[in-house]
Amino acid sequence: MRHPFVAVLLVAASAVIAGARSYAAIGHWSASAPQHALARLGARVLPAASNDHPIETPVRRTPLKIGTTTVTQVIR
Image (cartoon, rainbow, N blue to C red; front, side, top):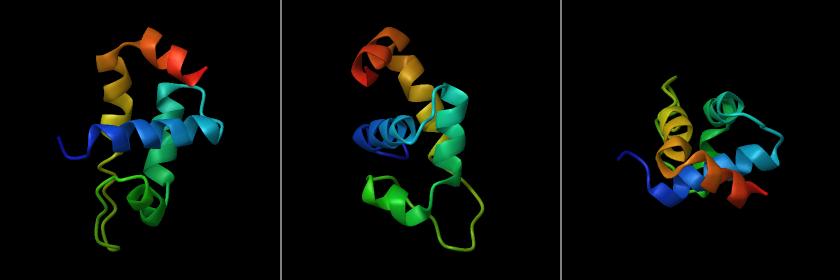
C-alpha cells in the first residue's frame, strides 16, 4: 500500500468534515488538497512538479473494503 491505512482514513475524515458527502466528493477533495495538508495527515507526498494524486484512489477504495456501514457509523 502506498499510504498508511490511518492516513487514508484521516484524509477521508477531513474531506467529510470539509463537506464531502459521497465517495466521489471525498476523492475529489483528496485530489485537490494541498500536498502540505496531506503530509500533515500522514499521506505520501510528491515533488512539487508532479500532477499525480496518489491518495485519491486509496481514499475511494478503502472505505469500500472495510464496509460502507462501518464507515457511515464512524462518520456519524
